[in-house]
Image (tube, rainbow, N blue to C red; front, side, top):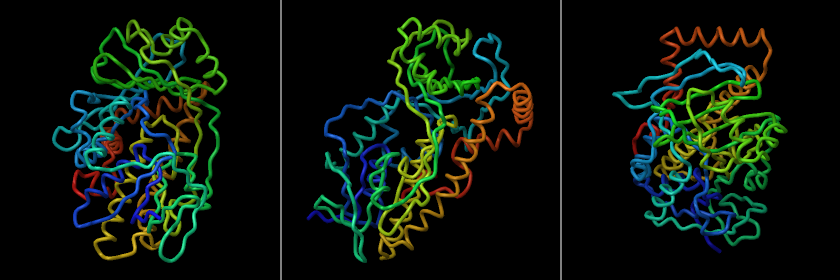
Length: 403
């Protein structure tokens, strides 16, 4: 029987970063077990482009991850938002979000998922965090002293589910979810463009869904292209020339010639929100707790905010000599994170429904709204603050401070 203080199920972004945060927490000596259902030696293969909020960058710097990405990230200089039809050549910009936080600190950066994966892997390997692969969580048994994973010779005081949207830990804990399919899918690819992006992100709201171009180093741009599910499947089946023609129409002429440098992948979109983020001796983080529509670009940031909050709650409880798996301790984490998550889920749901259509009166209403926001400086400042992840009470890691 292997015994840990904490077992983290899921060695993806959230799981590894949580293990690093707790491993480096001062005044805390916790034995951490990191397990994953995937086989070992999987090469980084995440071709998504991620928007990293300023608070997330501070956290990754504090954990020694961001420094490994030198020369591989792109500062966001501005985000331009348009509302039009795909065939329209002229797309008026209704809202531009730009600015800095603190003393010249960019409100966001963009990074290729493969580079981020490698940086996290390097940092966790350097810290000596080993992963037990091919590990399944088929059930759990919880008592006063700990939690044991069914079928595996592992027990711990706390089990963390960082194992994705179809979380086995969440299921084993009996935590139900609320959610639905959006009837949409995201086409993910990376392109190179003739015209430099100058660090600007562009979000075209089109009738089928948002079409985002996220700047990456060089002249690369990450594409997050949302369409109704059947249309997304049709587009993904096109030959290279046909796909490029459809992509060019949505990107518009302002980017010049386009070359597709990564094969497109299709990801179905749905909302999954756990009814509770904790149970006795169990906590959920990242996609195990919530999966939202990608239009806000905050999915990974939200997961890492969970990590920062849980790491701080657990570290502080350990320093006080409390039982780190006790429900009274874990509920502090839930109170910190669940309202913020539900609020963002409601906001993204509303925005997606408002913009993913071609109804004339709604188009006029939303365009007036965007134009008003663009003209009111305090509102734009609030948008930058929210995008940077600096609104509300932030855990210490998100402020760039040690746990």
